[in-house]
Image (cartoon, rainbow, N blue to C red; front, side):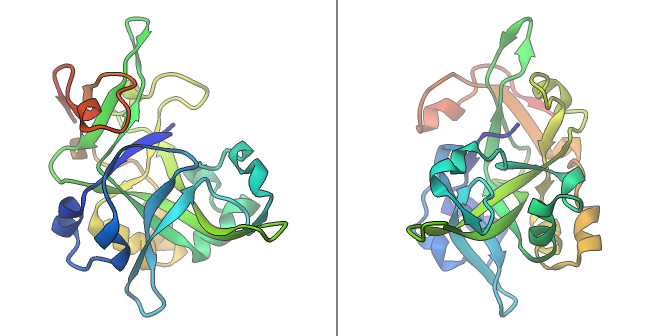
Length: 229
């Protein structure tokens, strides 16, 4: 569930948020972000503002053997486990973040064949995945970085047929708009917990796309009729 997504360009970001963290001045959109890539993340600054930076997409413990990082399946974090998991509980209290996205990909099975689909915002140029982040350092001290994971929840009716395969079918990212994203970043844990739910169907649209086109705009072009939530 959500292993590939699109990051927005600066124009879409500027339209959504008036204040641009310095990181975004140099960031370019990407059409096929994958787990273990570095992805754009927004987190609270100590002064109450925002910090924009790149983080490794797989949530790692503060101390971890970087050579085994790819084995840790924490790129997606189940919303139902945020309170109970030793791995997630502290970041949920102290280190919530947002991952800006222009869309994401799913491979639903339709008529016995998996067909790649792009799920995009129905109206705005971007939305935000709710996420958690950690600072981490490899045990040998050779590497230090920030890592993150995005949170998933039960799918809404629109997404259920688009994520209908695998051991964790009928899931979707926790998708927020900017107003809810601020509550996620700065609210207490009770406020944050209330946001761990599927977004409304009408926030989303989807359409089939070509397979394996690489990081180029062509892979986001519709190969069939779009469907709206």
